Image 1 (cartoon, rainbow, N blue to C red):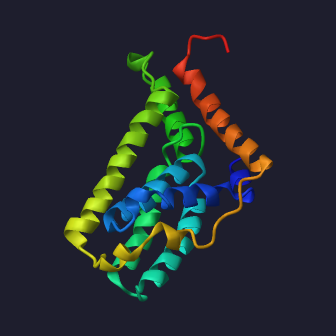
Image 2 (image 1 turned 135 degrees about the horizontal axis):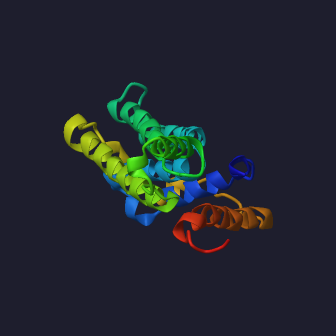
Length: 201
C-alpha cells in the first residue's frame, strides 16, 4: 500500500505542498524546518527511504539555484539532517516497521513478568508520544544547526515560491485523489482498535 503512494507519485505532491508554503519564503530557518519536518512526516507514514530520495534531489535543485557549491557547510549538513529526520520518523507508526517490532517485543517481555500483568502500551498512545518526541527532536536539530554549527544561510534568502514552482505539477488525477483518501482511511483504521479498545469491531 505504501509503495503505491510512490508509484502514484503522491509523495511528490506532498513534498511540493510542504515546500510551497508562503511562510518559508526568504526565511532560511523556516525553510530548513519545513524540509526536515516534511521528511519526518513522510517517514512516519511511508517509510525511511522514500523521503530521503524524494527530498535530496529537490534540495540539490534549490542549492544550485541559490548558488551553493559542493562542500559548502549548509548543503552538507542539510543532506545529513534529512537522513536524521527520516530515521526519527521511521519508528513512530505502531503498525509497521520498527514501531511494530518494538511494541511486539515489549508486549512479549510483559508476558514474562506476572507482577506487570495488565500493563500495556496502546498503539494510539505509542503513536502520539513518539510523534511529539520526534517533532521536538526536529526542532532541536534545527536549533543545533542554527546556534551551534552556524552555516551560511544567506543564499537561501533568495528562495521564492515562484522558483520552487517553476516546474508546476499537473492537477491530481482521480486515481491519486482516491489513493490519498484511502491513505487517511488506512491510518485511521490502524489506530482505531487501540483508540476504542472496548468496541466489538
